[in-house]
Image (cartoon, rainbow over all chains, first blue to last red):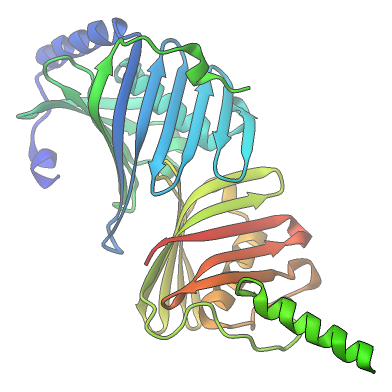
Length: 197
Length: 167
């Protein structure tokens, strides 16, 4: 982390080129199916909470976030509708009425579709050329979002320009890292996977 | 007399055979002194958490960590990992390290302070009123910590369910 923080942002021209590649690549992504590992780092307490599951995305705005470990938990976002299911209950919400999920959804969708990099209204972005990836650091401008997240770091794969992992960083120093593994791009995904009924 | 004895025996048997379910601090004003949920060599416990406040539902992880004999920290993060609150409990001080804006309500924080303090220290000295009456239930035990805990407050329609993940 410290090593990354010390690196200088890419030259403007190079950064524009990489952004262009990312935009091109994400434009061609219609579906993503991937396992994920989520690590919540509580820095002050020296604790890490680890969850695992499967993530599905289908263009335009369909997301299925299936946690399997340490407990089953399902989030489906289908356009403006949100379904949350755990062992005991199933709840449906309108995304517009749930602040937490609305913000998270905007970030995840924007990260996958590459639109966050150009979201100059809500984020100040800088791009870094790392050995294994392109790192995009986003600082929220929006004061509401700033209260929960100080920075969002997106790690783009240098071969296919899709997101390999992302960090949701909080001002306390805690962060949540979501790493996508065994990614499958553009494999057919049935609409039923995203049903919120 | 025989009948009432029989009923008493049956009730005792039913109670004894039901899963270990303790209702602790049913009425924090009653002056009863139940044992605190976390005692002895307890160091930390990670729970699956489900929090309902009126019509708002939030789920995730609740970590209770003992920093020292007199200091505990309780962090609630949603499933996606976003911290919803991070609270510090000292023997005579309460510190809000972070609270997610929609939860940043004075009455709610007072309730969290009072309820968690009772859970950890068995301290019922909070400034209570009838509206803030809370019910605690614990079920089962693994080592030093309960397997399940339910904290509910019908007055402000708040319910927190905790299921142990690890310790």
